Image 1 (cartoon, one colour):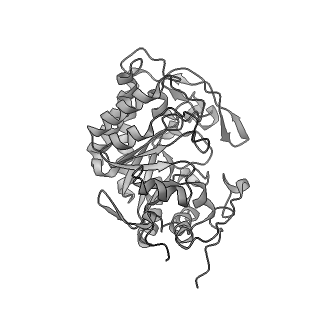
Image 2 (cartoon, rainbow, N blue to C red):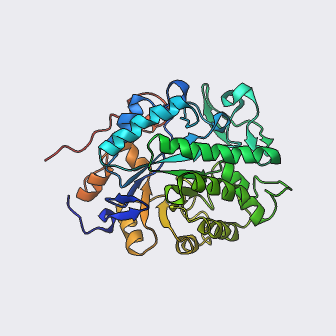
Image 3 (tube, rainbow, N blue to C red):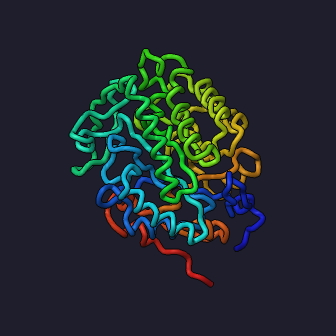
Length: 364
């Protein structure tokens, strides 16, 4: 490959993993799980094709049945799911790659048709989001949630713990706790959704409590060097805001430093959108305050990524949609080759089209 002097193609030691480059495949929901919400043979091929990434963060995967918020997203709570994921991790490892599983509970971003027994989705508070989700009939408004009772939270933490253990049994190199994008743990963090008056609501310390307990459980179960976390401090995605995010997320970093997890994966700005949505927020305070690795995400191209690593603003860079259409994105970046165009119509649901049929560069 050319461009070997680029910081993007330098190796990086991430826990026990030696990453051959700084290019991370971001978790991408594709709505293609099969029977029992287990990944299929198509998923095996999809991830195998992209194993040249320094690190793959596999798609958001629900920790238990009521964690589902979209049609045909996979889980990691049944033996059938664990076995199916083993085929994915085996394929990635055989191709020389590393792969992490993102642990997900959507909270209030769900619909009763996706919930066990048609029950209401759970949330920190009974505050309905102005958001939509994808069900069998298409896009619909999310359902009215119910507030989780305080005595339900210990079981939730244990379900994250078990999911982390299941991920390791399935062959994943690590897990990423999804505390971003307006899903359950993010809902507890931010006061736009958390109206609780118990030990999990009100003050910043209280709102961070559940994330701390989940991270602590996962770190205890599989080791802190196998646990990362995703954050989106200012993203309004899924109708979530906070009145004062800077002290909130600086406290999150302080709490995480006490646990020494592998990395933080930070969406800088609005998820998949405007990086400048909160121009006064200081992402540098998170990057330099956190003692582990920093994965930057949102709107990066090759040149922007190289500049960020060169400046010390990030250790690794996550790319999302470019990886959808370019299974060999690392090689294309190294050769400064043109990228395939993405077909938005095939992003969610379906089969091989727009999933495993994007062409790689021809050798030569």
